Length: 249
Ligand SMILES: [Zn+2]
Image 1 (cartoon, rainbow, N blue to C red):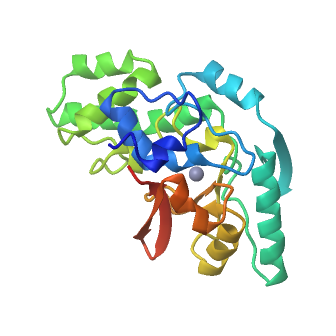
Image 2 (image 1 turned 120 degrees about the vertical axis):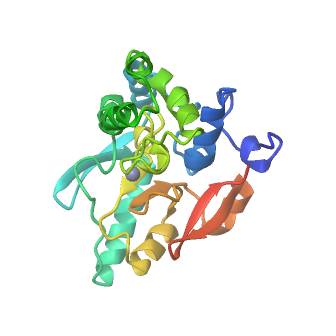
């Protein structure tokens, strides 16, 4: 990881990056949001520690609420304005942009914990049954806070003990670890019409891009035109017939 790269120079002042491998990994996978521009406030750490940590960050933001589709959702105000402009433009050509569900925009820390547990618990039971882990080892993981569990679980995955829903790949391709979801920053939005290239084009025009390669319905507000993304230290990756912008580190 090149800490002199353009991406690192564009991180928020005082950005906190832990030294452990897990935080570096999460920065690679979810990090585009940290260089968001256009008047929004990105988080200044890779992983929020707990609910208080998230609440304190979210309380500092200018937030707007809108009824989109059948859900009332919250985003940082600049990101919401851009999304509403994209929705209006889509509407002019007979397209729609709607959320996938009630949790498509803002999430709080406890929402991310429930999702995490829904992957961790069945995986622990599975690996005990397979003889790859003892009951005592599983209990030791359960006794940790979710924040402490993240590096432990990613380390187990390095040995092939995977925690994704299908148990064949990393949990981070299945769910964002607690405190690491871009939805906590109020700069992410999950879209029902993500398969439509015209919709993706309109969203990009309004500074909403795809930044998590494993998460096709997920879009991130980055606040600049596409030509500027490289200068922020992001690189374009093609996957699944679409383009993603990820940290170039
Ligand atoms: Zn999402």
